[in-house]
Length: 310
Image 1 (tube, rainbow, N blue to C red):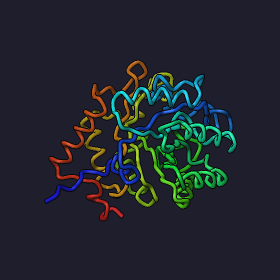
Image 2: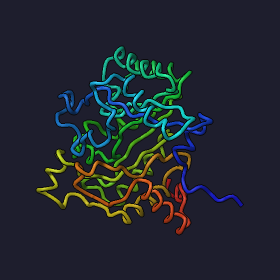
Image 3: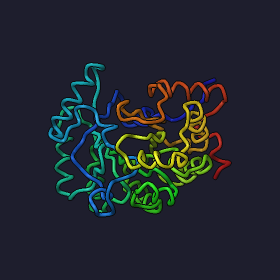
Image 4: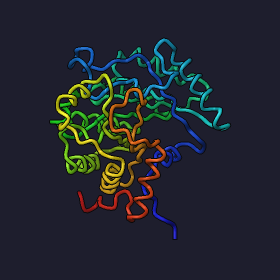
């Protein structure tokens, strides 16, 4: 008897479109965000320091082509047969004029080995004109739009200076999926003021959206952020999860999550020189092993509680 998968992995999602290994290459195209430049506010999200997820080759003084070529050289040492997705990751990668966005996306797609795009953005930065263009691109190229939702709770979104509400997130996801585009979401677990039940309820609300993929990660307190300053004065505002406790939270979340949504990750790992807390001393793959071991021991799997929670 075939064992039931613990959860739908991101690689399973990619395998539906590709028959070989695909690697994302992160890019920094020099964007900003509307809650940084004064359009909606200043300072950005209270938890955010983009240095935490930019590889060394992601420098804005390098062109998109140069960043991709350096990324390809790095990853090609590991695998002989591999193609790539250009991952527009840093800041809000749809927050520019349509013509400028077209030039960047098309430059990336012209690099040999690049088979498609993953575009990270905010739900309040997706125009209908851009969706028209992305729908056109997706006819011949793989395209995944990844929205930073971060929370489904409006009070939290205000507290972290996000600059949009959950209704905006729902609208953007639905408009994007309606175009036939692969649509993903990003969520941070453990934001200020959110109880365990609040966090688990995020899964129930996401289940109602036409999502293909989901990224989760633990809240991290990063040097140089407003949240780090707030924590110095009010350490009680956040519950910092230990690794075992957070693994249990993730498993409960996955059990409530619709089983066809591919889960790309559970955690994020910030550079040690920037990370204040929590410091678990675990690599990402070690945490995945911890979650999977617990799931097997408990008989857990994605969607186990899905039908009873709707």
